[in-house]
Image (cartoon, rainbow, N blue to C red):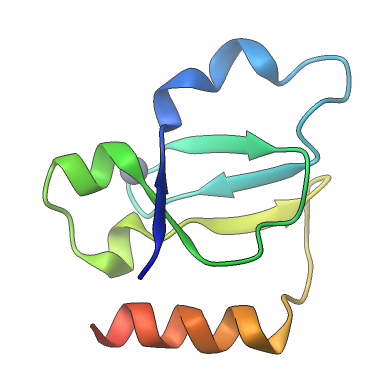
Length: 83
Ligand SMILES: [Zn+2]
């Protein structure tokens, strides 16, 4: 199971170097976090709209770069996408 977070609260927080981790869903919503997500998360706006997991799943970059996620994360991601 993924964790849903609210994409709509992002806009004003991504300044002053806050939010190194940026997650983007398949529909183009973005959210930022200060720490690496430990489990796959889905975009709340997409979940509310009934989007499939593949769309709602947030893909993360760290300071603008794609970085490898831990194997536990990837396993959970695969399970989410298969559910
Ligand atoms: Zn979304």
